[in-house]
Image (tube, helix red, strand yellow):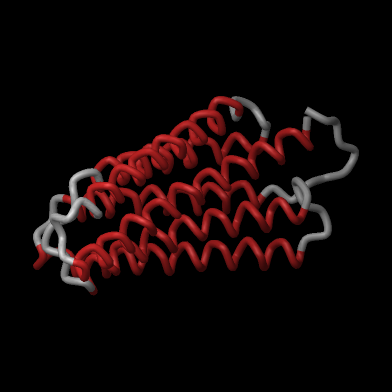
Length: 206
């Protein structure tokens, strides 16, 4: 790690950890949605919406701290990018849950549970990695594994699309379900963006 002669604002680490922990909460709500009947989904969506609002608050707190700090732990553009990408993950997860409720989807297609399992694992890895930004230790395995998970998510997404277009669904149902699985894929992409940003930070700090 590069030796520094200047002090650094350390509260960013705690805020990034809080954002990542909130994403774990969101991933658990996605898992809960899988086993819920239609009557319970609206309440899950409300809790997801509250978690998304908490994520927005955390992101705004990071931006406020960034704008008011003279010394930052790493480059300002990387802090902004990391905070924005973490926020994107929560936004996509909330959107997916909201679409399931708004579209009155009775049954999600086989394969969505695999998408959500990948997101849940990526959320756990991201939450474990954020505290390590303090020392830049033990991060390589994190971004390698998240990139592997994103590749897995791509494969699951393609198989889901093939399933949706096999002629068993009517056109309107295909449109609804495709939008949901596309948003879940965007969440997986956002996890990769976070991992790539962490890798960039670690390289600069090495």
